[in-house]
Length: 125
Image (cartoon, rainbow, N blue to C red; front, side, top):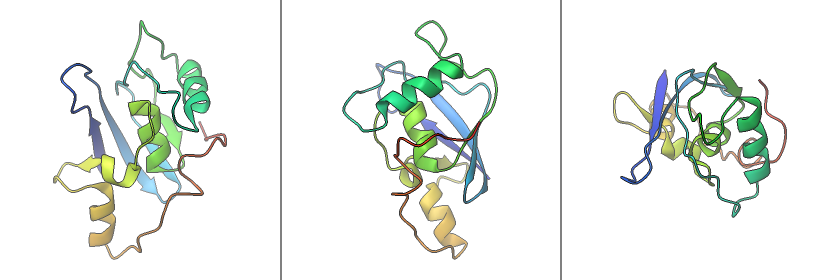
């Protein structure tokens, strides 16, 4: 299932798409765009900047040139929006439901992403 994270701020325009593969594989799709600003007010800011650099993201290029794999919806969301986020709520499916709502509709238990989410650990690429 695919999900979209789109900016709601008229001053900053970005839109990203990820594909949910399994509970530990979230593929941020080529062509996604990211917020040009990364806040230094969340614990993963340095990791986000490093990942963006490796992905070829810089102020002159805010578009992914290839898919990137993350281990949680929160990691993918923070990469895209440049600040702390609640990934399961930020990503919206084509049917209008959040990732969290979609998982609940499948009967999947609601789990926090504390261990897989906003950490400084290395993500798979």
